[in-house]
Length: 94
Image (cartoon, rainbow, N blue to C red):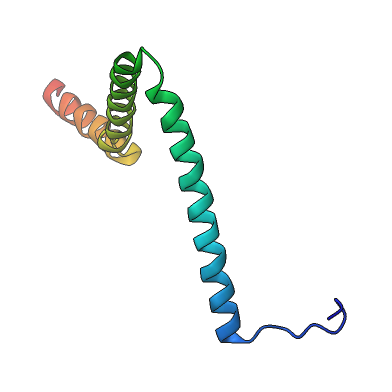
């Protein structure tokens, strides 16, 4: 078949092609990860690397939680509190 006479895949064919592509991607990713792990296992400072990785992950987690947990006060709420405090001070001075 030449490129100009190829038919377009229908819905079923596209699904099969997508699944096959995802499977190939997963296999190649796992192969790369296994190769990386083999390289790490051959090192003598693996325990140190694991401790450093754990500390790095904890620091990243702490930063992520701080970003999500700390919500600054609403700007209009702060302004309203200032107005209320000024009015209370003005009423007390009279």
